[in-house]
Amino acid sequence: MQQPEKNTLLADSIRLSFGQFNVLNGAWLRSETGKVTGVLGRNGSGKSCMFRAIMGELKTQDLFVRYNDSVVTHSDEMGRYVKYQAQKPFLPPKMPLKKVFEYFGADYERFTDDFPKFAQYPDTPVKELSGGEVRIAETWLCLCSDSPFCILDEPFSYLAPVAIEVIQKLIKRQKGKMGIIVSDHNYEALLEVADEVLLLSDGYVHLVRDRSDLVRYGYCRG
Amino acid sequence: MWMYMRPVLIISGLGTLSVLSSLMLVSAEAMGDTAVMTTIVKVMVLAISCLLFTMLTSKDRRFFYINVGISTRKLTRWAICLDLAVYFILLTTIILIRHAAA
Image (cartoon, rainbow over all chains, first blue to last red; front, side, top):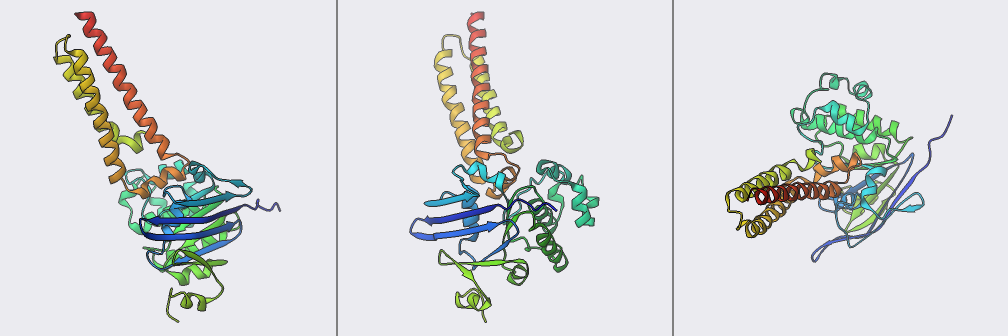
């Protein structure tokens, strides 16, 4: 059986400040095909800012991004390598769901295989779906795209436990084809799928070896 | 481009129609000065609508276009260029027609 191509993504030396307030002080993030990287951090620690910076939508003081052996200098290129599920809904509200899938080059039938409920929604505009349903569609589109990487910013928000389990299964299934970066405050669900966990604290990224590290960095109580 | 920049193109298009219709009402002699004034107004309308669009549009919505491989910066640039091109073509046409009529 042919092994999928192994790709690597590295974002390093990310420095971001708003006036006097330093958000990121040389933060870094790495991912590779076959690996799920979990990113944890308290509210306002700069996780979403880091993702937006990597996607080229937030101007930083310093940022270095490398995809395999090539340095990514133009932010317009990032969409080709990374699909990003933003924290808030990003699908056009008036667009029918099936059309959204056409834009992404994704197969709606495959989506309904994973989430049968959506078989009734192909012509439904995004705005008529519930927040959780939009979240599921967005997560699926990012995870099941042909991109070598995807970043999921709070994919478990607004989701029922059953849907979280399906998304977890989807992450485990898709990680063989791509590198996945996940951030969520539902850290129990995140820890179940993550192969490597990073914690963002005071603008620095720390590698988490076990749960005691989360307590030590003040992310949760022991 | 239409899907993303629709509000800007509609407001700016209405601006184009109103400033160009004002050109139709002035005398042929005053057209030169009026054309300069209307162009300033048109560019200001375009700049303000672009600024409001940037400020009021959800930043997360941009990720739809980024994810499907479309640069929102390029879309904005193309929309501005298209809008100005249409404006200058119409402006030139009106000036030429009115001079020919005079």
